[in-house]
Length: 148
Image (cartoon, rainbow, N blue to C red; front, top):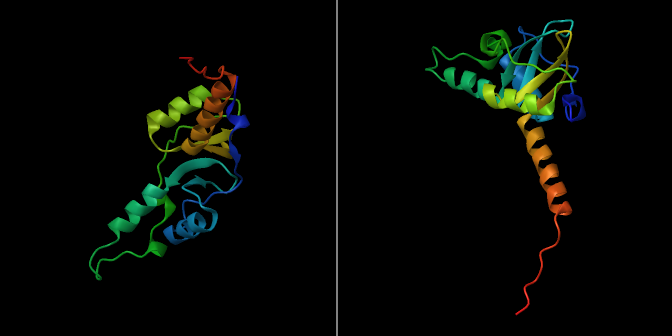
């Protein structure tokens, strides 16, 4: 049986709920992240911000110049999703995939005693599917040529 720990990406950092949108934008651009866990100072997961959340917050800040909200004025606490579905490193990958599909958020934070230890994304599951398809193809007999 494959477990989340076999495919997750270890994560030991996130942003706090007081960090601002400009910090999230910088982190996403610098590291290529599409999801940022929001954690308390001791690493306890409290929420998640996706690239979609960031774009939504930027879109809502596109008002007239008088009303325009700047990215440094929007905090993660204002845009994060709370009560996110999580997995432990020992969660079965199938159950984790079902959770990602159900919540439609594109990732699943991995926690131990409420503390963030990693993340597994929908892209990880695409990679798993590719590996499994390659294994199936390698185990199939070669196609036989028909003699005429």
